[in-house]
Image (tube, rainbow, N blue to C red; front, side):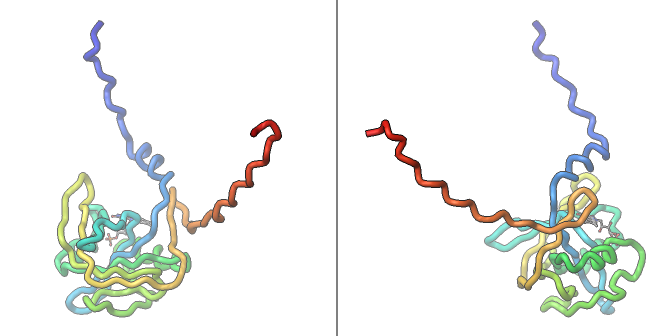
Length: 184
Ligand SMILES: Cc1cc2nc3c(=O)[nH]c(=O)nc-3n(C[C@H](O)[C@H](O)[C@H](O)COP(=O)(O)O)c2cc1C
């Protein structure tokens, strides 16, 4: 019997990929920076994640077609603003293209000079450490310079809809085993 025939790999369409990853909730993070003449810039990612504790590193992936990333890359720094459930309008504003995304978005300045968007649940100010090309995206690694958590609930996104994390109640303790009568 010929056992060398292998099943061909599944042809994965963009629809398959989106459907499968539509099962996985992510956080919503605004990556922001400021040009040398002070203009705030930014875009939204669902791919922001922690990467290394010592040294503190973070990562996110950005589409090669991003019009903002080339500028932030050249400035070599960014702030990752973890958005809250109160910031859906900020998410919508920063995930648009080709407009003044910061109109109506309030922010302060981090120690690196990058925008920290008011009302975010955390701010992670980074220098760009490295960038790897991966398919149609760049994988960015940021070296954390300063970071801070703030009050609020993190916004979540899954399959095109927003939501929030819902904690399970702590498990109830198992009832004491009853003496079944026959045991010694
Ligand atoms: C919830 C959410 C998650 C997103 N995640 C990513 C991501 O991880 N990487 C990415 O490149 N774009 C992501 N996008 C799309 C960008 O925010 C969007 O394309 C943005 O307009 C890019 O702006 P720019 O071209 O000005 O850089 C996401 C959008 C939303 C709403």
